[in-house]
Length: 208
Image (cartoon, rainbow, N blue to C red; front, side, top):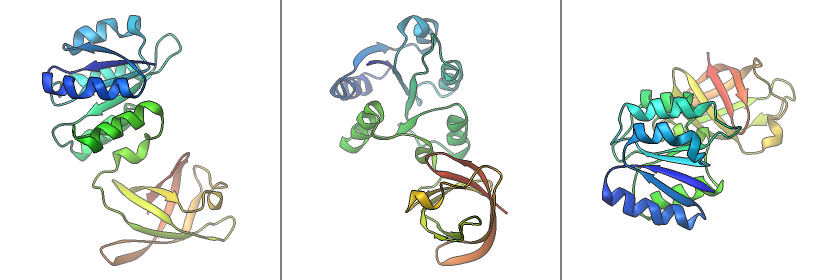
């Protein structure tokens, strides 16, 4: 596995390089993002790790370029956010196909990075906007079984739902409408309907 690290700060580089190597990856370091962008096709990395605080605008350009892949390869783009990223930025990262994000160079942050690289962690669950868990219980409109799980809110009335029993939602498809559902936070609940937007590793729904 080949990983491209894009960062300027020496402390960041010195912390991330050993963590990347511990995942079994060869590391190539670039301190200039635009230079890395010029050479990324030739490098053909399996993963790209970008320090977003050092490139607050250009990381989006890089992610956009690599999103469609090159030479049949689409690298995992992983963001190191030493400064908090707002919800709009997280949604942008998600739309650009960013694989995951971490926000510290401590043991937990570096472990997250390693798990992204070896495939134990990653995907849309890492873009949840506020870290809160929401209550969401519904009746599957096709099987009529009661479904529970872990829910996070993405904003604009969208939620992502990881079912406790995956088989209970396997038959749901984009466009299906859930009529009987309860949604709430902080012990405040309301009856809602939801439309299925996608059903991959998690259910993505829009509440109505």
